[in-house]
Structure formats: C-alpha cells, structure tokens
Length: 261
Image (cartoon, rainbow, N blue to C red; front, side, top):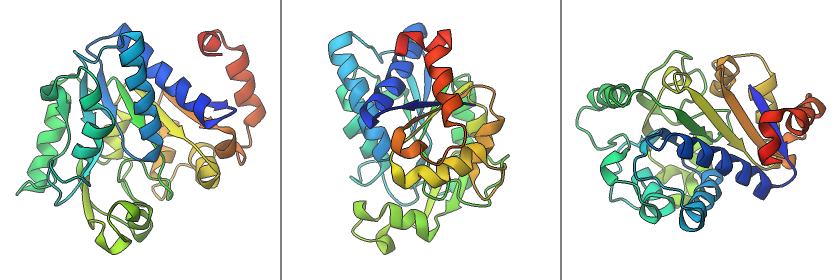
C-alpha cells in the first residue's frame, strides 16, 4: 500500500484523475471499476475535463460499478445507474454497452450477483478499481463484519451508512435497506486499486483502515493485503496518520511520482 498526501482536495483529486488518465491512455480497453459518492464526483468531473480538452478517450473502456441499491431501477434518479450517467457516462465517449452495474430490481438477487461476477471474469477482470472510504471503514457496501473473502452479494445497510446517504432520499428511513455490492474478495482481485479519501471527517477511519490491524469490522483494512494499492488523501484526511513524514518523503523522492509532482 502506498499513501500519497497532497496539500489540498483539488490537488489530491487531480493526482487521482491523472493516474486514471495515464492508465487509460496506456491501455485504451482498460477495465475500470467505478465507485460513487461525493469524493468521486470531483474525480469524474476532472476526467470529463480531460476528455474535453486533452483528448482522453473512453471509447474502448469497460466499466463495472461496485454496487447498486436493491429496489431501485436504472431510471430512478437516486440509483447509481443514474449517478454514473450524470457524472461521467453522458459526458464522455464511452459505449453504453461497455458499462455495467448490478441490477437492483432483479427477481433473483443471488442469481444477479453470480451473473455480475461472471461478467467481470468474462471481461478479463478489473484492471483498476476506484474506491472511496465509508464512515464505518467500508468499501463498496461491505459493512462491518463482511468476510474478507466475500463475493458480489446482497447486503443489509447499517444505520450509519443509511444516515450517510440520507440527503439523497429525504431522510435515513427512506434509504433502501439493502444493496448489491461487490465483495471484499472481488475488490482485492483487481490488478490495481486506487482509493481516494478527502476531508477531516474521514481522518480517524482512514488511519484505522491503513495503519491499524486487519479486521472484518473495517473492510477497507483488507486493502493492506493488496500488492498494488494506492491511497490518495488530502492534508485534512491525513492528520491522524502516524507515517505522515514517510508518505510525504515517498511522494517527493520516488521517481515514479516525478511526473505528478
């Protein structure tokens, strides 16, 4: 795991978008794992600008999203299908047939989860998986006590998660109680993982996720086991990290980061 600290939210977002853009240019048929949430909105906006002004093409890119609420159809404005259209897909040259999200309205949710795993495998696996960090330390909707070997499946959402998403539904009680989500094991199979964490509200959980013991209570701790995981954070999110000086030294001195400095 590499932790990269940037002075501001904008610089952290720009670094993350730069990495995604470089991977996409190096491999135009990149299989990209997409996340949602506030952190991703600025990242996708940055990528859209690179598409418009720097000729960044998504024409051959294939995407798989982490999750979708159970019971919300693709046309529901609160769905993650709608989120991805609004923040990325409709603004770039991606082929809609190349975009994949779980079907939260499937009659057989277990069958849909198995089918989704099969689609990922048929695409050759995920090359780069984007992640945010939930307030309880979850990645995707892998809530506390999710198995670190778990696969795509249906999960009940905790009160913390429903409260975190309440503004989009008009209150926590209106947030769907369940979601389909990639499992922790599914996420760990991506060839590269990029997690972006911003703001002081995430400082405590970021420190636990990256520097604390590996535990099913905080699913993001499993990323410590990944051989190619990068965590990009701003100064506000980094304040509780014990290794701050080391992480800054790495970014300022390692040759691979010279183009991004």
